[in-house]
Amino acid sequence: MEKRFLPILFTLLLLSFTSINCFAEQQTDLAAIVAAEKFVETLDKAEFSVAWNQTSMVNQSYTGHPDWFKKILAARPSLGQVHSRSLEKLSRHASWVGLPDGDYLRISFTTVFQHKKDSLETVVLVKERGMWMVSSYHLR
Image (cartoon, rainbow, N blue to C red; front, side, top):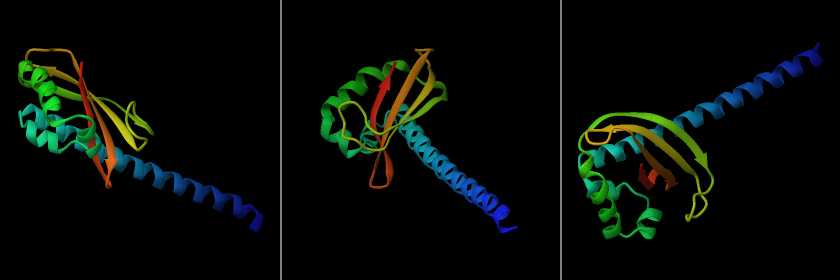
């Protein structure tokens, strides 16, 4: 009787750990998505100084404040208002090109701007001090 019970117990334990890991991963994904959405919404409002403060220490050390503003000001204001934005893709990475190894999430949004109908915004986040911080932003 006990021999039959052990495989069932093992299976239940394995399923519970898998469920806990999946739940933790979903919570991580949600926190990162919220951080990315907050960042792009800050850019939408042209609050570029606030957006800069939402970027990671790694980003700030690799990209100087004036260079970052120059790139953002060259791209964002001419696009006009956001008409729609939807989550396109989320992917995990242990490293990112040109940056130290870490816990990275790449989140892409399909965005329709007033003056650009088909855009892909990509926000790369890195986990710093237990929080998701913007490591880079790309607009295509």
